[in-house]
Amino acid sequence: MMFGDKPKMAALDKETDMVRQVRHHPAELDVIDRRILGALAEDASRSYAELSKIVNLSPPAVHDRVKRLKRDGVIKGTVAVLDGCKLGRTLLTFLVVDTSSYKATRELLTFADRPEVEELHTVAGDGCVLVKVRAADTESLENFLMEIQSLEGVRSVRSYIALSTFLERGPSPD
Image (cartoon, rainbow, N blue to C red; front, top):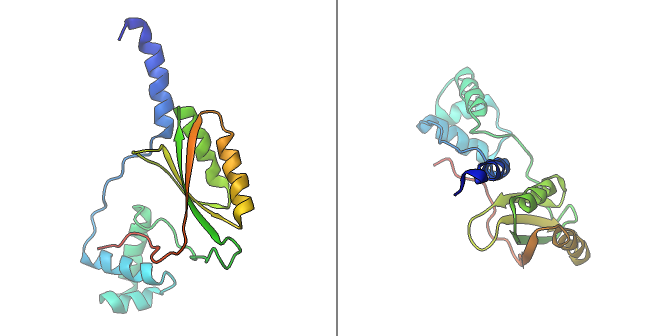
């Protein structure tokens, strides 16, 4: 690399850093933490009293542990898991999008605000971005695909429509 290329490389590094996610480090969890997490993963509405019986600790001790697990980012949130089909979004599709630049990848990341987008990941392999989309019907999926394909720098989009879902869950605390 020639000396004159340094500004270009610095700009490329800055652009790349905008796409990169922060490196994650596993939290230090003991057996009780993992049992609490397992119980909450099954039913996040469990009370501290109920959790305390499961792990044989006092409710205040369980509360402190849950508070720490939230603070450390192990518990990212407490949410209701909604049924997409019952909400009228019956067409589950996975998209693999190949882009020609980090700018195009960044542009795709703005689709995270769309209600039909359930997951969005930058990936290694045949594509650059993996998108999980739950659309109401083929017409709405087609419109969504046209929006993605119209972005400058999108080279290709491959779609995989799910016929049946046998397992959908988050990570296990074990």
